[in-house]
Length: 559
Ligand code: FAD
Image (tube, rainbow, N blue to C red):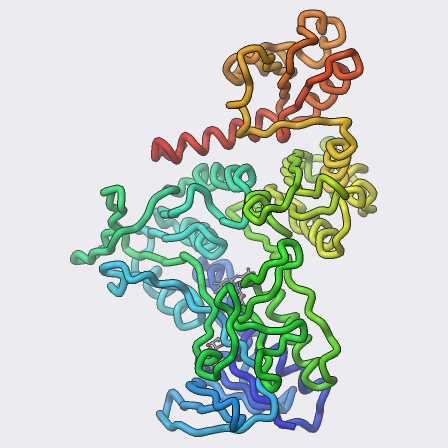
């Protein structure tokens, strides 16, 4: 059996190694158009930022070590330019010699990845405008940054890579602007969690321009002028385009393979393309999202690596190992903050017509009495009928990774918020609380589902009528330090004595700082004959963060 693999990084290298482990006798050839195989794409921003000091640390495997350990014929600097699916051959071009040749296969794996989007804007090909996808890009950017140390960078696009680069360039002492077309950063997130991160980015001295579109680039003697559609311009020494990627389907198209709705390579549940002898994995494919039920691309290393292993199993053992799809579990470090997501955001559930409820809770990363606890905000989206957990997002500073992994596994197993209330976690004061933030997220969601709590959201203040009561149950001191227009104040601890001041026939919108005191107040009122009481999910904190951020965007300011 002869296996040929195109692309030797995340998906391709995983598939090749697994193929060898399953079939010691097979001939395995892997082609890579770049110079390096199996390198750490995910580490590239941190090498540019000098967090990873040694360039060699980026190389998980070298071609010769891979060949030695797995007896795989590794051909780097060799691009595959065509596939003849009928003849079962590929055309390879050696980049060094220019020599073109054909190679036959019995089974082929495509793992060509994705291409950075480079819109045809005037001036986009100027020197100093980069995309970051591979080691070559990294070397260019790093040497450019070293020459320009301490100067100005403009990052176009506030996705995961753009934000990682913003942090790394800022930590190198550069002035950094981020220009993002959307009204928020990180498109997979809902606004409240994105807004928390936005405030943090601004606090770190990054100039964050949301709702801003680039019109063109101009090169003057030493700098690049980034012209925005608004008429404003920003001067930069270096520009990084980070506006997304698209699946690289060029070879698939040449081979006549079927593409899907999301313009990725179509594969079945065994990761087999429309040609039974060709499998495909990684950024280049699309697959049905298990929550929305729609075919989608996933541009993440974890799924690519795992797909590599699954497709190798199917190629050697026959189609027996199903791929179940990715729920896009992702995490990003933004300076000292961590943002993570799993499953589907509320806004995307809404677009897909999927009914759901949302709850936001804030808790300490570990017991408050043990030094160093930091706030963590968790937003969950869940089914109003059976409580199935559909999405979870977290903003915090410590322990975000382990919480998102718990939430991700609950989503992946189609389990519910009821399970969150019982998740058993390892607890000692330095690590968590006896009720972990994940349990608390579950309690709040369960209360909503069981109608013990009723919530409203930060963007629903417009629905509060003249006859309704807006009630702030924080302390007098907190109220006087700043509240929401038209709110009256009855602190939670006086609510039993003072509830006679409230009209039972009116609807009461109440809030506290984080949502917990508001919930307590709601329980007291509803058990004392107040029928229509709703509590602000995520509290004043979320309202303030979101409304501040909206003002920053509308007024194009950075505070
Ligand atoms: P790749 O790993 O991109 O490999 C494709 C390879 O195929 C490339 O090396 C390419 O040169 C080669 N190739 C393409 N066409 C041909 C051809 N015709 N002939 C020969 N070779 C070809 N994901 C995360 O989950 N977490 C992260 O923190 C994270 N950080 C990232 C940071 C950066 C800077 C980048 C660029 C990506 C990051 N990703 C991250 C995404 C992750 O790296 C990708 O999802 C993953 O590498 C996709 O694997 P793949 O095998 O599909 O493609």
